[in-house]
Length: 267
Image (cartoon, rainbow, N blue to C red):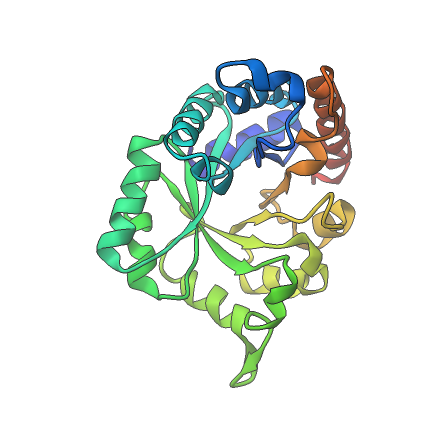
């Protein structure tokens, strides 16, 4: 999906919601455990219920990899089930020496038809470059994360600037706003004005709204640009809104609430 196509979807729907399919088999409704592929059935119903209110889905690959071969099959079925109108993100946080990253890129961009993958940048340009060589795909680089451990390295100052600032400035030169996004956690709201100053044109993938306590209003006010420029991810708050047979309807209601609120913030 191109940047132009993504922006068009956001404007058409009045939403920049990304639904995270962190589909933990231990948390899905118990009545689904009797079907042949419980996680896929859960994902299928969640996608059907929320697709009108979001523009993207993010699959956290850990919840699928932990199930072995069966989990990979479920992930592939899920990616293929997501409508082509929606931006498909592999939240895999890959990044390794060049030839290894090339294989990761092939796995998620060719074997599995994702539009984007999250990547850790701390091994440098040669670990990220193989993903950026796919000009029709997106590389989403970890910039400033929402976890408490961000204080250990990302927020530390060296030579007069914070480490995450150095990462944003350096990595932004490796790609363009058409193929490069950055993860910036919603719980880092105080840093968002600075992040947008450094990167005025790039899209941000923003996790941390919902259970992690990030404010959708605050993020929208501080991070949005004229193209919207943000995809706000909500995972547990949407997909685990209900625990019984009506779980999909509960997820639909929460996704719609996010969409309505987002429509009010779009410029």
